[in-house]
Image 1 (cartoon, one colour):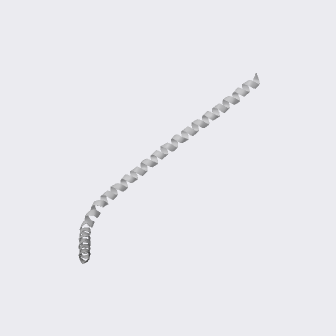
Image 2: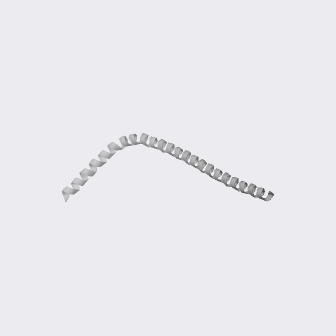
Image 3: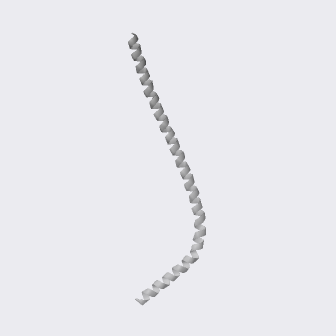
Length: 87
């Protein structure tokens, strides 16, 4: 029982010493990685916005074409009915 407690204390102390030695190294290593990640995510966000804008424009074009076709059919019907009335 006492041996287990001593082992835990030794392991905990070793981890504390290792962490205090590794923390500055990890901090200096992770800072540029975090900056690169932020730049990458910013670029990805810009691409997503661009794709959404393109998709929106495509949908607007499709809707405008459908409205034009509907209006064209309606005008054709009206012209045909006027021609029938004149005969």
